[in-house]
Image 1 (cartoon, one colour):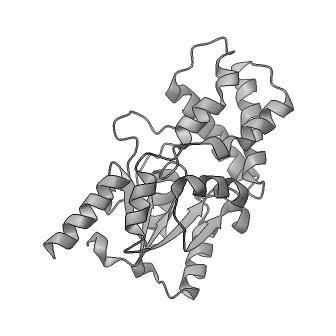
Image 2: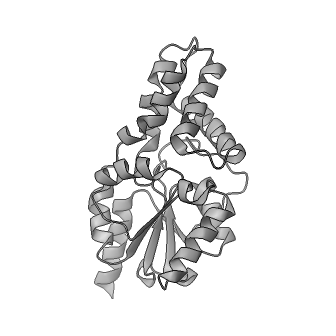
Length: 241
């Protein structure tokens, strides 16, 4: 199997192209600065992962900014910090401030020359529009949780994407699902028989950060520690052909 065997890359966005962990930590400072306990970065992210995944499972149709507001409320309660609902809503709107990884825009410009680029993301369309400006590339299709009414890793999200891509002439064999999260993306990719590429942004850190840990990690067909490394491997393939 080679990177150049595929016609389309289906991307997770947050954690893969957008540095959501840095965005979360920055957005939660009004809470963490007032907590009566020491909270390390991973403590913050793992608590966020729990409350976010719980909210996504129990209220799958809730728009992402509203869902993040609830996550903020639950974290405030867990850490014993008073929070106004206005503060919760402000955190829900903070996705627009989350930064892109340094290599995302340039890597996407290169990949755009060789693949159709698709996004399958656990956000709403308005939040993604802000992030897309940072990524500086036009995607061939964008499928959000708001479009589908559920959040990954729900099978419904992948079913929707595959049904839509089939209308564009793309079958499973044409697609390489490219993502950071084993929980949200690579597990379902395995279930649906999709080839997958792990952009392991957290390779130099312990734990799983803002994603839920898995007892049995899924199979990954490719693994790179950055999107730039994936680009370099693709270039090497073409040079050797």
